[in-house]
Length: 138
Image (cartoon, rainbow, N blue to C red; front, side):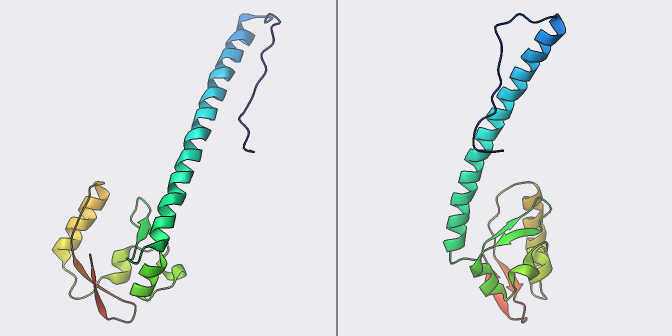
């Protein structure tokens, strides 16, 4: 669909029957809802682009996960810190990539629980790079 809103035409000619009139009213409501959805999606896309710009420029490692916790996007800083390529992190969880022998499983569990409950969390974890060296994830 182009950038134009969906339009429709209502004639001043009387409707032949009640069914046609009801269909025209229903079509009008559906088109109004579609236009509102399009405006909302346009706003959300612009917001996502602003967030993406900030995340790309950030020196801290940042990942955007899907609802299942798997990474959908990682900034260059995360890739540099972890040692993984973009192709290797997509559809993996940070835990799959970075968990190691000294990673605190209790803290890890509380982070995962908070994530799936859509709650904020603030903790420090020992994570591991691709080459096996440690780093602090804060």
